[in-house]
Length: 236
Image (cartoon, rainbow, N blue to C red):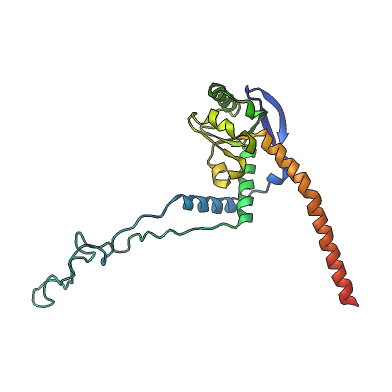
């Protein structure tokens, strides 16, 4: 059970709340490192390309005869050994894509949240939708920074779907990134500095979880019934 500090939009501390149990997982630094490696690889466009021997604008005529000159044997001036020739073993402009299975990506995201929460770098802001002035947002960030001991140099605001208008208030602040909570991933959480979550996000997350639990339990019951029915048929 990990407790999260809750603030009002005025920067006043409120009673703490617990990180949803579904988002708390056991630490696996190997998985987190693997996920971050995939995300950082995708940041590079992979457009670097050099001209090879057959692509440079040079004549393909042999520069001098093969024997009798006392010099090394050469063909045309486009060889990599000459200045202005093609480049050997250079980048080809092919983008390699590392992939991460969906379940592993979700697990890495939960792991990053767990580590951040244990370090006290996740806070929850109540009634974030009523924040209308950039000045008030700046004051809120400063109070959160003081509450965290001044550790966070930058902040990532994870907004709910209905509070996207808060982006207009926060977009002019330095070292502040805003995005919907559903667009977070392990990389953005791990390198996003202090994570500020809209309280509405966690409340809706808990509601969805409660709605899904009866369906999941019913599926388990149905699967058990099917297994028992199959066993009865095989025994006959």
